[in-house]
Structure formats: C-alpha cells, structure tokens
Length: 187
Image (cartoon, rainbow, N blue to C red; front, top):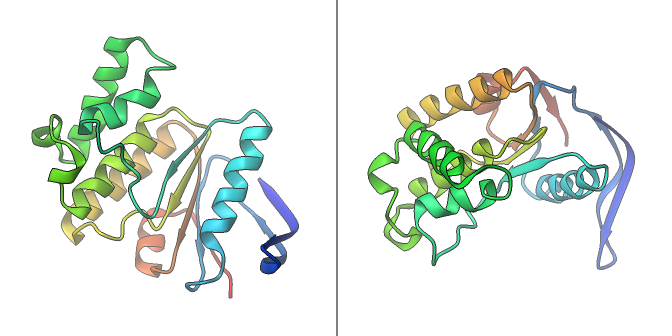
C-alpha cells in the first residue's frame, strides 16, 4: 500500500502535510513517530480508504472500545457473526481469547476487567476478524511485559500465516523491533 503526498486537515488544522509512505503487502510494518504526529489520524484515513476500495480491515485501537453491555466473548464474537456460522464464530472467539490469556474471563463484562485485559480483548477481536489489513494503534501499551511478549509473538504468527498487511503505529522502538519486518520513522 502506497500513500503519496497525503494532506489531512481537520477543522482548519493540518494534521499531516504532503506525507508519503509505503507499507509492503503481507508484511508487518511499524511507523514510529512522536506523540501528536497524527498516527491515529493516519490509521483512520487508511481504514476508511482501504474499505472504500473493498478491502477488509480490522483495527485494534489505542483504547479498547468494547461494548460494555456485552461479555468478553460477545465482544469478539459479534463482528465474526456476519462472516461465520454461530458455532464457528464462537469457536474462533474462544480460541483467540484463550491465546490472549483470557479463557477465565470469557463470561465477564468489560467493567470487571483491568485495562490490560480490556486491551487484550480488543486485540483478540482484531486478530480473530479475517481481514486483509490489520491496523494496530499503540495496541500493546497497557499490557505487562511478559504477557505482551507472548501476545506479540502470537500476533506475528497470525499475520504471517494469513499474509496480512499489518501497520503498527507506536513510539516504542523495542516493540517495533520485536514485532515488525520493517520500521519506518517519521518526525
């Protein structure tokens, strides 16, 4: 995916100006940029534009964005219900939640979870959805280091196995080095 000379202006303020970058298909690429650069704005733009082109996109946001009235299992299963049978959607949801270390929390509601657990539910949902493009917006921030490493290894394996194009925006170079095939820096 190639972006050339992108300018994004919101409410009269330029967020990105004449920005160009390329994200290789089927690879995991990190974009390292400081806070306030417009990383989230860029991911939102990519999501919208790629979906307009008919591509499937999944997104693990910086904040989990879970449905508070739905259980952990339902938060992952609901997007899958439009693609798979009820049984298959449930099976995939349980698999991804288990890989995130949340098998004991499947029936819990989001308000009963820690910040890191909520983030892992969000990641399970994004990974379980069979998309061509996976967008990760500083998605590992609130997860402890030991769990983070396991989840990043799993994320890498899923992305490689399914040949997904992954765009990971972060300011953490160690995470980018561990997870990604390529690292691009912006300032």
